[in-house]
Length: 282
Image (cartoon, rainbow, N blue to C red; front, top):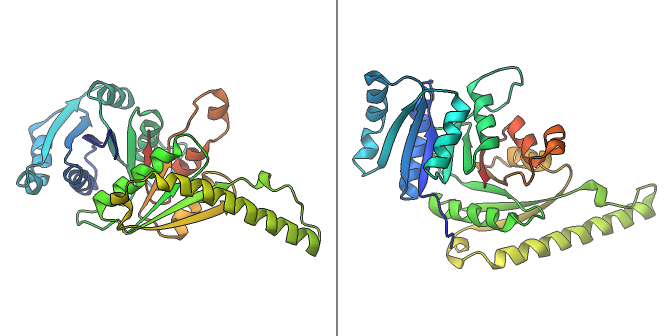
């Protein structure tokens, strides 16, 4: 079982047209995980703002939702980072625009900046709903990384809590691993054999991870494995989009050095254009 589940959930709120939907999504998550919910607004406090939030949450208060409303002033990103660290938040929920606009200092861009810097796991919502929409299909990365087993475990944990029925583990295989150049029918056959060998190898690695997942998490979920040859990050995002996944679960970037800022890592392709709601596990 997961030792450190989402016990403390926070949501960064702005008084936008999606406020109610974002609050409802966060409140439902908090109740699903039996967690405490912190609502953080970086801006001046007012009676009207507080009343608006409490009115939206009245329905959840009747169901014993544990929550607090926090108003702070200052630089939005800095305030959020400080709060997450001080109060040891496990999961941060943020509303986000589907596509990041490089020159637009918008909620979508700010959400992505916070997602990159946050010390905890982050859930980016592009399609929040006031009415509950069941999360039917979860896609999770199966790339070769020491963090992947925990990320896959969290995907099953989410499926268990959200009553999801299907998980697809996508194994992105870099095209550079294919050493045979196709020139004719003979080399095509050899290339296909090499691809199949790599697929079997990746599936065997993922099968070992699945053996460690608690049976309680796996018993009600249909599990698929999908090896894909392509660019890491981009390929899984495209797959999540075309398969109409409700949630994409990804590893957080492993490095934050100069070269990673200069050249996009896996998650940057996802953050640039979110294919669906995205959960980044840290």
